[in-house]
Image 1 (tube, rainbow, N blue to C red):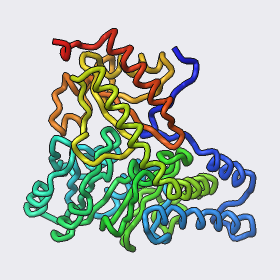
Image 2: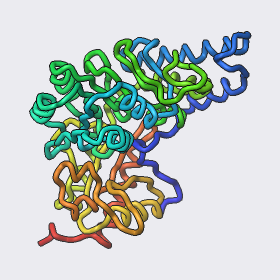
Image 3: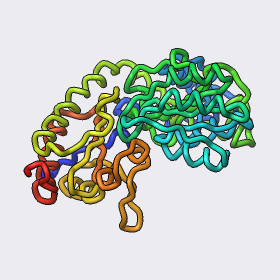
Length: 377
């Protein structure tokens, strides 16, 4: 076992970039409430607005349409609850931050089916919109957090707008990893968060493509032009802005992570031909792989990897000692017995070929000890 810990769970949260840590520390060394009119307050305001512009630039938005929140979950909730009385239509592979508020907000919410790769079926959206009893809000993520599969958001948005629907896109996993432009996608609302790209935890944004009425979920102080009250997280905003700058500069380097990911998948396939990579037939984020280990449960794999000094995530949720299949894989039609053997491998800005070597080594050790040798038959 290696004494050096290998971190391969960037889709959960990325390592904070040193430049971001330096920026946050510098801003925390100052004092000032960005809503105050004295000089320290106005200096803090300048920091917030500079960060807002940098975040907007990451997705081609107007700075005045960027609303600071506490993170992706709050942004998703604000989007789904703030657009008024609309029929909600969401994909079956959305993050829980979209699924949960949608179910609470609209008992008649429509769950849009996906194909075997996890992509929303355009014809299903067309049919759902044609049958809707009132104007709709469609919510489809840009890239899946478990499989990395990229959704055909621009095509879906065109369909939705033809029917007078608004479109929300949770782009938390995509922005800063692949080029994202809110105007090219055409979506009306977009969720982003800092900690997926090496920024601070606890800060995110909801981005509007154009000015629109949005009912605030958190009221009291009137900050963010009345759309989200609360004292601004000045240091967090500054760190997020710096992370966005670095992400934009590093898009080509991030794209190159696909070489490491693909190398890992080839080597694992050589060890266990019966393994399965979920979503491999579709465009994916360059850093993400969701793969099964025949005969070994996800929770067992995560624990064994952790003992070997490698951090990954399960592709299934563990509760009370039981493993229940991921709703993403279930929506893709993956059988439970296979879905409960899936784990997620996700690279990031600090990942190296040595990290991949270690993952493959540990994967092979676990499979040799506990895997089902069906491929040997």
